[in-house]
Image 1 (cartoon, one colour):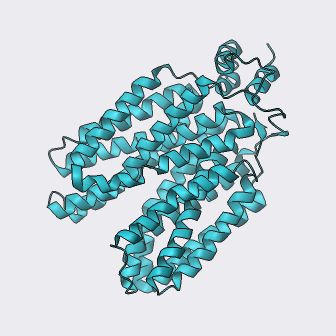
Image 2 (cartoon, rainbow, N blue to C red; image 1 turned 90 degrees about the horizontal axis):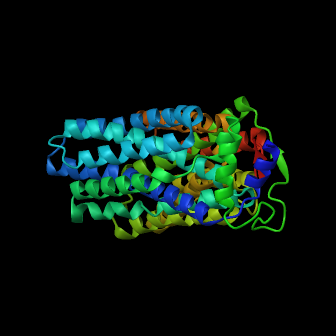
Image 3 (tube, rainbow, N blue to C red; image 1 turned 45 degrees about the vertical axis):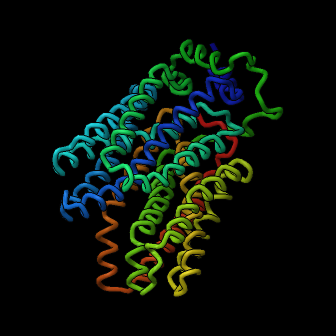
Length: 424
């Protein structure tokens, strides 16, 4: 059996019902994970106000969450490349859902912190496996659009934070935990990635799944008239790791620093809009807007042509934000900055990183990049606190701009263009 023939059939595969099922299962997992990420800070605030936790316990709660994300990202890479995508994909959701559900009945904050750590390990794994797995199943010509669309669906989980005061954090934990377990059951028959099977030289198994993906289509009948790939990208692992680590770290650090610290920074500058409904709404709308832009443009203009200008715009808007004194201007520039962050989340984290690596190293490469970003994020509160001690609050936005500009240069200089290219 010719591996080239199998690879070409995967490259030109149609979006049949099995692919839609895989997309729905991946997107559902990413949506639940996004709810958990957005919910964490809201839950910690509620627990502190009610006296159920202390400031120190809250700090530990958030810190173990980031540590769990770090470990989960690394584990997903090792398990996914060594034992298969399917096994890694099942393991992470079981961890995430099971410990989230268990956290709902936590008798004290120590037990909740314990549950948070292990649920975050599952969460970190889900981010790596979800996007990478979808990348391997999607037809090349529309690969970027499908992966970015999963990011768009995930970011619709942001409004979940408004439900915490109404339903209590325990009910939210039960809801997320139950939905995760239901999704885990639905995923039990998800197929193994044919690309991983081919990398393991298990060609007969790969062909059976490719036949299922083709459905009633023959391998000559893809859903596009033109060839799926114009060229083959042969990744250089060392160079790809540098690009992936810099791009993902810059995206997550800039987004996290801005969304976490902007209320404190604005209050320090005497701009009291952070508690207003209009400010929260405008900031929240930036997430789906940016993800939608990513969906529309990532395949149309290419990865680098979208990512590099967006990093540059992030740098520009970061500098503009540093000098705003008017509340309306703060919201407008903040919305544009938030939009840029989520264009990057959709194009860098959801699409570009997985495409930088060959199949045999894809999960480990994505895992290392995401784990490094999470580890750096753990240190950001201390870096920001030091900045606020010695410098003005405006320099935080200058720091965001500098990080974004460095990432733009690295992606432009070292990053390959992977649009519509087969990646072996």
